[in-house]
Image 1 (cartoon, helix red, strand yellow):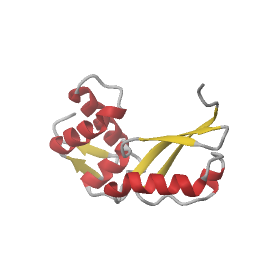
Image 2 (tube, rainbow, N blue to C red):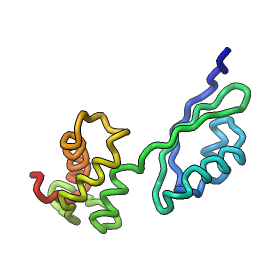
Image 3 (cartoon, rainbow, N blue to C red):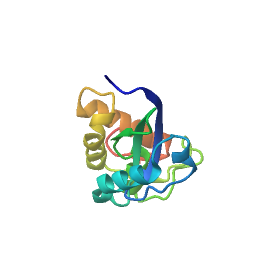
Length: 139
């Protein structure tokens, strides 16, 4: 017999940096146990933000699924900017090469709703444009 799902929570933590706190308290899980498991699973992704989907069960047990780093974080890192533009339509804060766009799209493929890498690249390029970052070769 399967366990009853009590709650599904989507959170983001720095890789290897999950700590017990108010965000996890709302999930209704064993916080130290989750933090240990999450930090062990993400220790190789240091410096990245890692989205996680936690499925909490009524008996306080849990499962979690790690997602890929948000595209905006990857774009900022590749374009070497600290934040996106306040007015993306008029102000360009950086550029992203077509090769970097392809690398990000290939990394994000499991989490994107795209059939091929070119479609994923268009999604990543759209995110970059909305941040005020120009993508070379994709206008």
